Image (cartoon, rainbow, N blue to C red; front, side, top):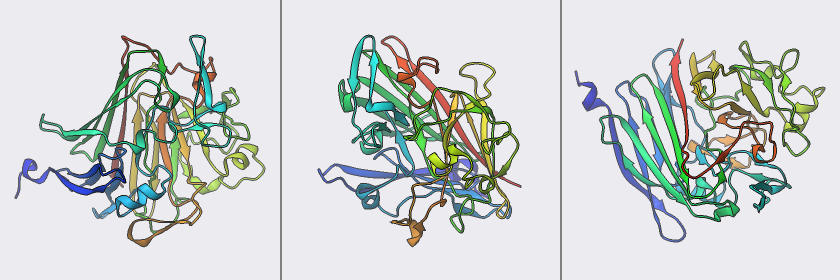
Length: 359
């Protein structure tokens, strides 16, 4: 029998080129149990991620494309690292220390996920971890003025695949000028392995409140209790149970769930279980822990069948869902929300863990 060290591995292979000729690589990470992930230095994309069902069978549980060309042509952030600011900023502008910064309007009147060339569309400087762990360290320096944001921002992210079938993501960043930052991972999950939609997945979100949004999906500023609404996932329930409730204005505005939940976090920056998803047919369970104060639960409402993904699968509405751990949307403009300001001398630091098991 092979030892754990020889079973666990990380390999690198060429994965094509960008239009400007930059070469793109794809890393394959494999742990001792047989979980396999493929991660690109382009956008920090997680392109493949296998997880075991109750019979021990590993299948790919994330949406994406077979090749780089799909991501370059059009992608709704499949598997991407998102920054400088994950989620929306109202009016595509914010004021910091008396100065107003204008950003790209790329989501109606608002700014979404870092702009035209966000962190999902750059090649990260990538190296394998040398401490015995199966993982990657990714580094990117976003220059002062990049996409309208102030400060030279130095970002370092580590992806670590552990032997208990978890992916630990550690985000750190420093700046030389006051700026705003909100990094997240935007994988779309389907724990059936893509055989059906996600409506039968049973989801739990450890949150007594969520953030209602206006017509353009910007938080109104209210922290609304989930109790008595279709936004109550404090005990697990099927996604499909309330996702089409046309009597709820928030469901109508989001075309389903596309909201940030305010996590029940006893202490600031404490790692807590934020959310879970269980798929009864396969028996797959995914648990998400984070130090972030919020999680955006997005149910693939804008997938419309126009994308053909891996293995020729057409991604329709409800094909995949996201748990995007984050600070709250539009925090730069909402002073009552936890701050997203990073100043020189400070270090932005946050951790999120996605752990898979079966039952």
